[in-house]
Image (tube, rainbow, N blue to C red; front, side, top):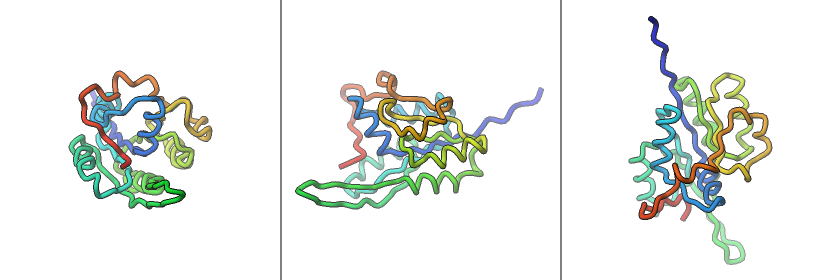
Length: 176
């Protein structure tokens, strides 16, 4: 009997969209449990986490690496307007580029975002039969550009018990 080859599945995670999408629902994601979930549910062998780099968040980055994420950093831009301090680290281009650099190394990809800027990437992966799943953090807040992929979408709205922080767990922040 012939053995079927196990597919190599990579995940590409827009950390800001994931974090804010979950927080908008009133809970916090346990990144360690989320990595285990990706491995157990989808057999994800490599999970790229795209995140803005802030030097004072060194402990966060060390924690995420211990959780088996491959971190891809984007320098952040700080702005001050009307006494409001904003930090912006848009990772869209890095995520698309990395998914194409890795393209020959994976059989299927999971894209984790609700951002419509990734329509072209998701569409390309779908056309090439390389899209395993589109995971959207918040069913109530995501781009309508992603609607054509509704058969491929998994929403995290009802995953609080499975993926949410438990009392006493260490807080993980993706923003200062």
